[in-house]
Image (cartoon, rainbow, N blue to C red; front, side, top):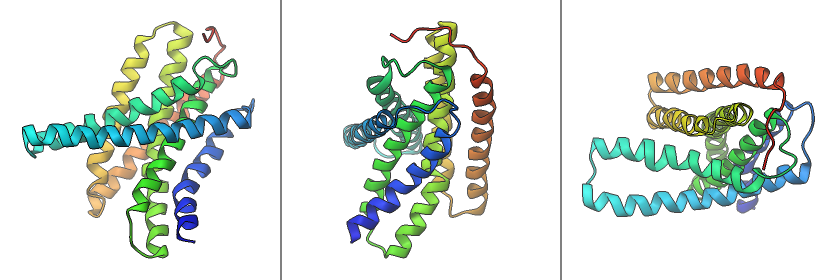
Length: 232
């Protein structure tokens, strides 16, 4: 029963956001392919988790814990690595697939990979909890409106860069997008770490709201774009 509840509370937030963003695509994607990309995203979350543990265990003994290391860990070891692994999940799962035939598909599929990533991350996070079912539900709801949403938003914004990079044939846009979303992810981590304080809770949700506005704006623009690149 515990493991059933764990899976439910861990995966449900990702599924809710996934269904929400799938509705943004007027030409529905194959359900099996969506499920496959979602699962690949989860597998890459394991790789990302191991990378963070190994990086932390290797670097920390040499430099010692300090504010500088905390910032490095927050922005690079966590923020950049997670955005990179989510992009790699998208790349290896779908990059050369013929279903990736519209600009909006870049956004949809990388969000799908990101939500698979977030689901596995939630499983890891909640499985370490020993609190009651009620507490697990509370933590799951917090991650639904913050952590899981952040993963979807950050990868969605990177998906915008992917769509423009493909249509404009400017692959450097992918690098710029990765740096931007890694920075946003790092800022979120700094705020979310102190969400028990009202000011940081407000800053966290202000950041999420800002990112949601940006993504919604560009989704509307991308829907009007004509596909001028061939996926290879």
